Image 1 (tube, rainbow, N blue to C red):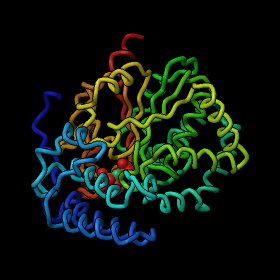
Image 2: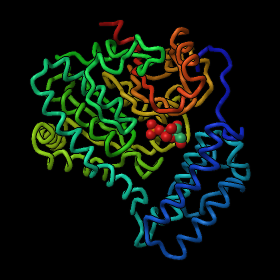
Image 3: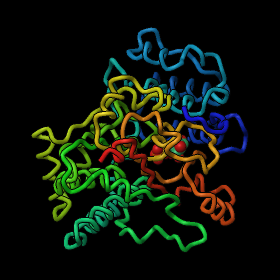
Image 4: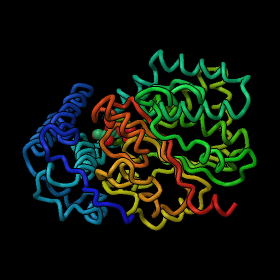
Amino acid sequence: MPDTPFAPVIHGNEPGSFPHSVLAERHPAIIRQVREAFPYGPGQHRALDELLKSCTDGTVGPLPADAPDRDRWHEWGLAGHTGRSWFDVPWLWAESYFYRRLLEAVGWFGPGPWQGIDPFRPFKRAELDAPETDEELAALDRLRDLPEQERAQALLHGSLWGNRADLGFRLSAEGAGTREASPALVADDSGTLWSLLPPTGTGTLVLVADNAGRELVPDILLIAHLLAEGRTGRAVLHVKPYPYYVSDATTADVVDALRRLRAAGGAAADHARVLWSALADGRLTVRAHPFSCAPLPYADMPDDLRAEFAAATLTILKGDLNYRRLVGDRLWPPTTPFRETTAYFPGPVAALRTLKSDVITGLSAATEAALVAAEEQRWRTSGTHALIQTDPSDQLHAQ
Ligand SMILES: O=P(O)(O)OC[C@@]1(O)O[C@H](CO)[C@@H](O)[C@@H]1O
C-alpha cells in the first residue's frame, strides 16, 4: 500500500458515527423490511431472529460446516473474527458478512424451495418499474442529435449520478458547479478517462457495477454507447454473484434492466439492441466473480482478477462500496493523492461515485476547505456530491 500518512481502518464501534449507525440501525431495519416483503416460514423467521440478536448485541459466529463458501470465508478472515463483536471487526468486513448471513437465513444458498430467491428483488423491481425510470429513458431521445462527445459525457454523468439512483442526463457543464461554495463534483478526471477511451478503441473496458435498477440502467447505456461508437472493442460487466448491500446488481438484474430498455422503445430500445447483439457475439460479457462479494479491499484481489484488470484498457469501478474497496476503507486525509492509494491496481482505473461514506482521497485543499465551510463533515455521507477520479497507470504515459 502507499507510503502515505497513517490512515486508520474504519470500524463501527464509535457510537454516533455513520458506520456505527449502519450496524446498529440500518441492518436491523433491513431484516425488518425483508421479513415484511416475503411470506417466510417459521424456520426463516427463527434464523432472522438469531441474526438480529447476533448482529446487534452478539458476536460474529461461524458458518455452517456444510456452507459451500466456508473455505473461502476462512481465507477472507472469518476464523480471526469469530467470537468478536460485529462492532469491533473492520466495518467493511462486518457489513459484508451481514449480507452473507442474511441470505443464509432466508434460504438463498439452499438446498430447498427458497434457494436463489433474492430477498431484495421487490425493492429493485419497484425502482426499475417506477415512472421516474420512464422519464429518464425518454430523456435519451433528446440526446440523439448531440455531437458524440457530448452524448458520451452526458451518459457518463448519467452513470455517475445513477449511483444516487438519480439518472439525470446532465451535460458536462451541469453538476460541475465550480463557482459554487460547495461543488457537486468534488473531483473531475473525466478528461483523462476519455483519453483512455478514444473513438478508435479496440481494447476491453471492464465496468464493475454497483446498484441494480436506476444505476445499472445508465451503466449499460454507457456501455452500449462506447461499443456502438467504437470507443471500446469489448466490454465486461462485473456484477455480484449473490444479492448484496440490498440493491447491488446480479445477473438477474442485468436481464431485468435489458428487458426494461427493450420495452421502453425509442433510443432506449436502440441501446438495448446494441447490448443484446454484443452479448450474443461475445463483445459484451457478464461476470460474477466471488471476490465481488469479498469483505476485503481490492488490494487483496486474487490472481485471476488481477490478470483481468491488467489486460483491460480501463476498469471503471462504480459506487461508494467499490470506492471503499479500491482505495482501502480507511480514514485518509482527504488530500491524499488518489493515485497513491491505487498504485497497486494492475491497470488503468477510474472511480465513478457519489459520496456516501467517510472515505475520500484526491481532493484539493481548496475543495476540502469549501466543503467543510459549507457543510462541516456532512458532505462525506450525504450522497449529494460525486467524483470522477482516474488513475491512468503507466499505459497513458506510454502512448
Ligand atoms: O456502493 P453504494 O451502493 O454506492 O453505497 C453503499 C452504501 O450505501 O453502503 C454503505 C453503508 O452500508 C456506504 O458505504 C454506502 O453509503
